[in-house]
Image (cartoon, rainbow, N blue to C red; front, side, top):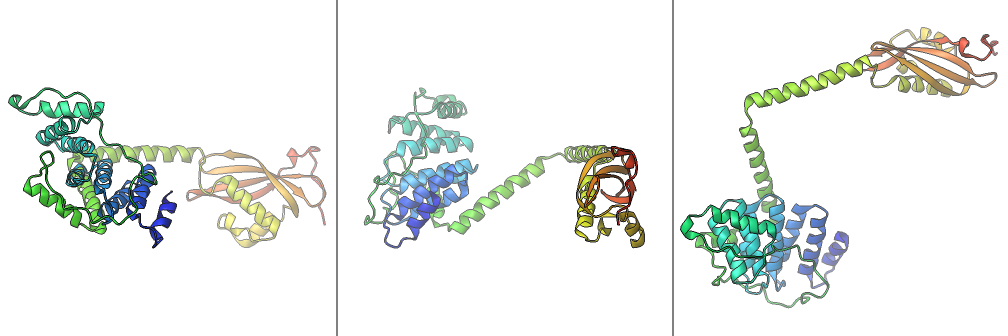
Amino acid sequence: AVRAYDAALEDPEYLGQHRALRGKAGALYEMGRIEDAAMAYRQAALDGDNPDPGKALNNLGMCFMAMDRPTDAVEAYRAALGFDSYTGRGRALANLGMAYHVIERHGDAVKAFEKATELHSHQLTDVARVAYATSRSHLAPDTEREVVEGWTTGEMTRVSAGDESAGGAPPPPEPSPSADTSLPQSEDDGVENFFALTDAEMLERDREARRAERRLRRADRHPLTVVAAVLLVVSIVGGAGVALFMWGVGYPTQQMTVSGMMQARSAGDPVAQHWVAVPTADIDKEMAKIPPMTGFVIESVERSPRTSVAIVTVTPESGAPLSYRVSLAREGVGWKVTGVDNHWNSTESGDPPQETP
């Protein structure tokens, strides 16, 4: 869907840019790409041909809430309420009340909730009803009023192909305060500043908010708590490391080392990289015990902390299968070969095979 909307946006003859931006934003939101969805909703709201910017601004506010940025959500909802053409004022006011509740501006939250229900007959969800009651409980007793029943906050409305005109509409009108949406002068200024921000500034604003949140979390941590957490992690990692060492676990593993050596032998390639540091002549002498082969199987591995033994069955180019005992030693965190011995007692006859020319 995002690719389809992008294709429409790249078409110079397509006049419904704001519709494609809203559709793209909805798809991004469902994908969990909330920040990208917010940018698309903002672009849709700023499109001069959009006859109903309030819808995109309301959804932009919901994106901000999903990103844990309720202060920005307040600005978006207020901007939506500034457009007389927006028919979802009850929904935006209910959402505004939720944002105010989160930032603990309880008086403003109660006013927004009550305007949504009393002036626009908007019904509240259970979550919003609880937020309304909680905000009312924070107010002085003489400001309390009867609880208003019912309301739902604004869902992310989907864009259909024919819900708006394709273009030709004049630029959106300047926000004009009405009886139910008037803003204090300082907050009107905040909405204007909100529209003045560029996309890059919006992204930087989001990043700075997240950095500030991380700094606050770090500042709230008690030093002893941090030390205890570090010691716990070190002890867990250290204990796991000791256990793995005692079980003979390493990298490369015994199987990887033996398999690599046997594959190199079969292909006629050097095998020294799989051996401990010993003279090449000694390695050649040990590897000469293994005849030219067509395949091999690692039958078993006996592990211990510092040494291991792998039993390998080799299928030579001629004759019966042969068994070898490959000794390994731990080198660093992994394993290397230290010797190869015949393991004839594992053959069916128990007798060593005849040498092959």
